[in-house]
Amino acid sequence: MTYVVITGGMGFIGRHTIIELVKSLPAGVEVAIVDKVERAKLPSVVTLIHKDIRDREGLKEAFRDLEEIDAILHLAAIVSIEEAYEKPSLTVETNVLGTLNLLELARMFDISKFVYASSVAVYGEPKELPIREDHPLNPLNLYGLTKLMGEQLAFRYLEDYGLKVISLRYFNVYGPGMKGGRYAGVIHKFITSLLKGRRPVIYGDGSQTRDFIYVDDVVRANLKALESKTTGPFNIGSGVETSVLELYRYLTEIIGVKGIRPKFAPPRRGDVKRSLADIRRAGNYLGWKPRVDLKNGLAKTVAWYRSSKPTV
Image 1 (cartoon, rainbow, N blue to C red):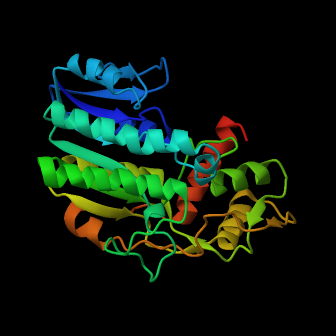
Image 2: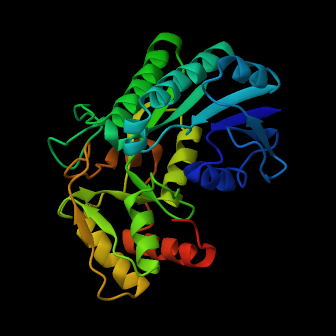
Image 3: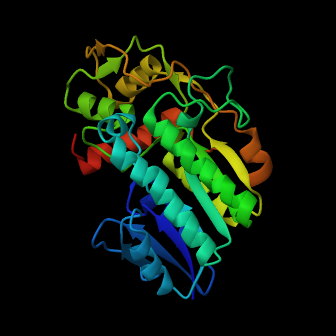
């Protein structure tokens, strides 16, 4: 039996990826998830490995039990700028040393493909828009720095050991099943506030822009990367620049609320002013382009929130 290993498979992007991946698995190929979740209801072709990516010896033991591993899709990470600020040691251990552990295991077990979930945060404040993959890498915060370090380690293994590495630089991913809690993203916070009739908080004046990409489009990029023979970095965004105030207006229209004005707070540390992906390279080399525009994606996301009532 041959396996595709997905770290962080029970996370937001991981769950969506597994749903689509199992639909197209060829005969003799199964999925193994590495996650800190102890148990989960999964399809028969999916195995759960209850391990932390910081535990190299535990991972090595688990990998030995898998007959053959064809590829690793590495999604597990601390993904919040604020959480990284509050937990710097954990962030470095997870995002850098955890990535190194997986790269070492890929080398030891002769795994041919490594797809790394990177981030727009590796760029820092853009010098020009749209941002191309050859833009200078100058992260503004610890989260972005650790994602860049993980990416550079992966490309070192490409150069030194021939590991086929693709780095997918996700822009602002959203969709059903987004993480809530203290470190939730802006779309989650806006939707949950507006559905409860509360005033959402905008940090800064709202003119700051982001490139929002729907999770289903990210999943397709993950699958394209697993299939591809190419290597290198790829921007995974919508190619559309949207201000936070525009996002707020779209959501008030979709949800159907009037008269709820946002509260404004000082800008957060480590936030960039503008963001917009140049996605031509992903189209040229991966055969990928986004399919879901922002308004449709937001409508699908709001529908999910209304039906599932997730926590704030």
